[in-house]
Length: 333
Image 1: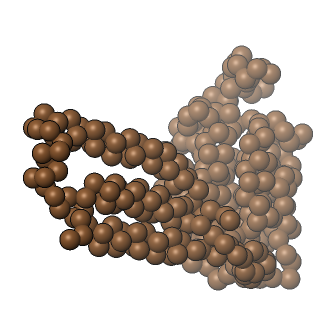
Image 2 (image 1 turned 45 degrees about the vertical axis):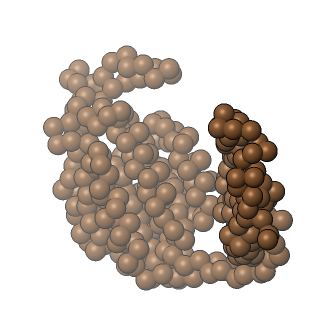
C-alpha cells in the first residue's frame, strides 16, 4: 500500500489520547455517581441505561476517527501507466561574471543579486527547458538546455566572479554564444535572459541582438546596478575587500549601469528591458511573457500513477458512525 499524503498518519498518535480521554470521562462519571449514591440503587433508578452499549459506542467512535485519519493520508492501492507531455520553450539565461559585478551598489553585490533573480525565475518555470551560461571577456555555456531544474540550480550555485579566464564584459559575444546554443532549425520558442550591468562598447551587442532576432531569439535584459554606480572592489581569496580598481592614471574606476544599451538589445528582438528591483517584480513580468508564448513539445514521459482508495476508508467511517447512532445506549426491553 502506498500513501499519497503520509504526513496525516502522524494524527494516529491522537488515538491513544482519545482513548485516555474516554477512560478519564468514565472514571470521572463513576466517581460522581458514587458520591450521589450507591451503584445498586442507581441501577434501579436508571434500569434502561446500558453501560455495555455505551462502551461499544466509544469503541466505534475511536475506530471511525482512526479510519478518517487513514482516508486523509490517501491510501493508494494498484497502479496505472500514464503518458504525460511536457510543452514549453527554451530559456537560456546569461549571467555577467565580470569584475564589475562585485560592485555593491545593489546588496550584497551585483552578482549575488543576479543569482537570486535566476534562482527565483527557475522556480517559476513549468515545463520549459532552461540553460545557464556565464560571460565576461568570453562566454561559456555552463549548463546546456535541460528540464532538470535542480541541476540548473546546482550549476548556478557555483558561479562566481573570475571564473571566466578573459576579463571584460563582452555582451555581444555572449549573445552570439547563447544564440548558437539553441536549435538552429527552429525560428521560434527561443528566449534569452541577459543579466548584466550593460557596460560593453567593443563587441557590438546591438548588432549581435539583430542577428539573434533573425534566428527567432527574443531577448529580455535585466539591468543589475545603479546609474550613479560605485567603485569596483578588489577582493582577496577569502572575499575580503582589499582595495578598489583603478585606471592607468591611478583614478578609482566607477562602474555604472548602462541602461541604454540593454534597452536597445531588448528592443531589436521584441523583448523588454527591466531594472532589477528588491521585490523582483520584473521576474513575474518576464515569466508571464514566456508563459504566453507558443509552446513546443519537449518530451513524452510514461510514468506509474498510484490509484487512490481513500473512498473505501470513508465508507467504513460512515458505516461505523451509522452503527454508533443506531446502537444507542438503552437496554432492550
